[in-house]
Length: 113
Length: 114
Image 1 (tube, rainbow over the protein chains, first blue to last red):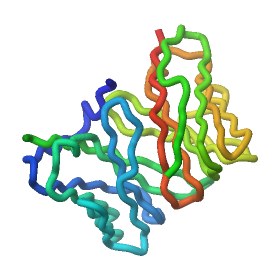
Image 2: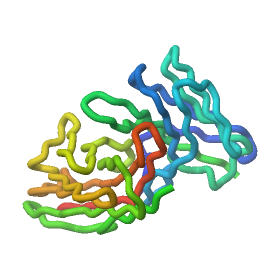
Image 3: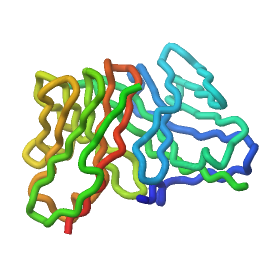
Image 4: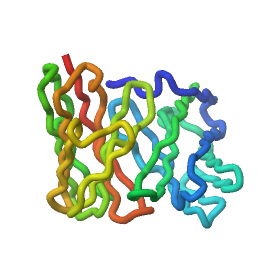
């Protein structure tokens, strides 16, 4: 399939360790943020979201942290598994002439067995 | 979630021709977005397509090159017109029922222009 993430920064972690993927977003007025996982040859898959009135949200094995002061998001994956290997994107919803969902640059996660 | 069907999944086209990509959703959605993704890169928003209004294009994308239709709340098309090899990319449709809510993606259309 199409190689996603060839030119993206790469995070390499040992299977079973925790992973932290970071993202700087653009617009201080953004209200809503989403983390996506994209595997080769597939469209982005929704992982977890967070609204601007929250600092932290937890899902199954994943946690998203939001720091609005420095416009920073992070995705924490607990007990990383080989199936977590993919490219991860953060995206922000904002409004100017219309609502739009804008993607960050992405990080490739490699899980070593 | 929403089930999104995007067609075609891939195509190889001659330069100078046009290709229309279809995006069908299994439920009514307010917002539909069209993206382009070059190999190894992030997704770039082409335009936002809301039913009953003209699509809103991002900087660097124009209606003559990427005309969009949004005839109802479950369907949209993106046409890539007068194609050149530089248009070779993956094109993705995304939908969201309301602003600031979950947005889901189709599998994408892999376009190669020769």
